[in-house]
Image (cartoon, rainbow, N blue to C red; front, side, top):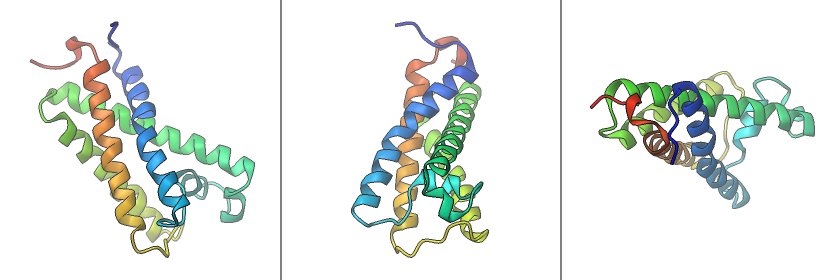
Length: 151
């Protein structure tokens, strides 16, 4: 299998693919009423009104914004693992997404962009981000060329 040698490209690929399981979990949690918002809606509400976040244009903005955040986390994970090595990669990936979750989820609630009325919403969001971090780190170590990582 051909491995990816470019750190930015690797991060984008790993971030995009790594975010899929967390997004699926978020969709399931939303459908079961355990959380009251989707990540795309949260991201969209940073740029458009809450009313418009549910419309088609708002959803597109939300998908773009959420994808860019996933890309950034993937690139951060790639550079972290490239600098520190593959050992404990899952824990490192979880650490990076934990910081992202705290910043994004915490800041958005304090800025009154989004405040959930569901008691489990914050914890479930954190679990989604743990899955995202572990998956992204695994993808970086699997898809990345050996030359990117210190021995």
